Image (cartoon, rainbow, N blue to C red; front, side, top):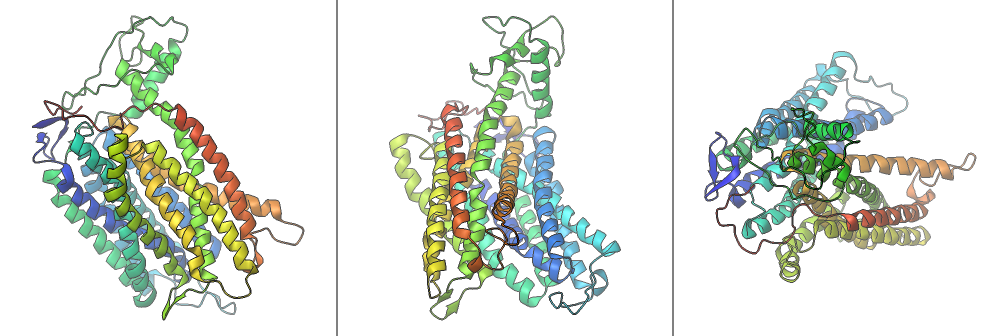
Length: 558
């Protein structure tokens, strides 16, 4: 049975029995895990490469990594715009994904050839003067970084939306599978990150950066090849033109018609996509009524003079989501702070588990392992249990799931403050097991807020903006990290007393006041949580989060 609105890789109508479903999602899971295996360890280890091999300063190394992360989010918006407007998501991945392979290949080549990087030097020895990367070699370094960032950004923006496209939210069975997709997509990120932190970091540390980065390039290429083999099975959404242009048209026409009286009944002028003759039916909402004036026909023709009801409702969806975008971004600030400082706390504890010694860098494995175990339990046991009682495809609504994650982070910051106070007062070195509650709550947050936000933005966004919504989610995570850095700097500046540094400016945690900073994080997280609850309570879902009662007769999904 054909599903309207989607085509196969050759542009032909698709059939439910052949295209989409769990089989198609498997190829997407593989590419997700592989790219995570490459990116997670390198994001954590890139500063070491820039400082130790390229001999960049500590500040320059950190700034370069921050810019690299920001550029990846920015490039994700470009890839999302192209996939939503002009080319399909699978083609966007296959067109621009190889750039990530090229970028890591260039980095591996630069690390391998002595002529392309500075001579070996112990940069930690103050008596030696190490030559920093410069000139053509510096150009090659930055080009390789940003080429890989562009490829990764395009993959990151399109993969979740493409995966969600493989399931019809109006079909009861596929609606449940679509909800599970985001859980297993997050699981793939965690699994890839876990393997990468063990394998890639070990290779780069003990076997050489050229081998580690070279393997990263090979893994990306392997992931893209496997992804390409799934082309015959994908459901590809037909691009509908620039969504930003449509939104701008509504805003401009509504402003021009601001003095006109709004009629009691607006003319229903639906908009048809020229690609496959698809009509997306959007239920009309009574809020943001000033935008309804864009539907008033003033006698002039053209998209900049008169807009359809469908186009106006699409704009309303975006504007209704903006407060939740901002409030959830602020609420997510606590996550990177607690993760980073919990790992630092772990490095000050007794990290011996019997005869096994856990290095500080390997402590990131602990929250990732917690997350993977909890994701499997949540998807296989908790969601089915809640679904029977609530009727929601995800067990609970997206916004309820996100709120659980934010609440767990508040509790985590309270426990972290108490544990840090105990660590400072303890006469002996505290066991790593004291941090288990924090790691557990970090896992709860990653199981709830991360996939919850991803699923919310993807499911609620208009059909022609789903990749852009996914890219905005990644931007939200990146901006939250920047806000976390700003909070640390602001607290340090506010707590400086003469020649005495701020709470977090000590040479180690033993002469810092991380416990007091955790209380600041608690207050900020609580205020952000209350703000989020206010907007979440007011939000009206565009897509019904409940499971459909029965399959549609003609299986024609919009």
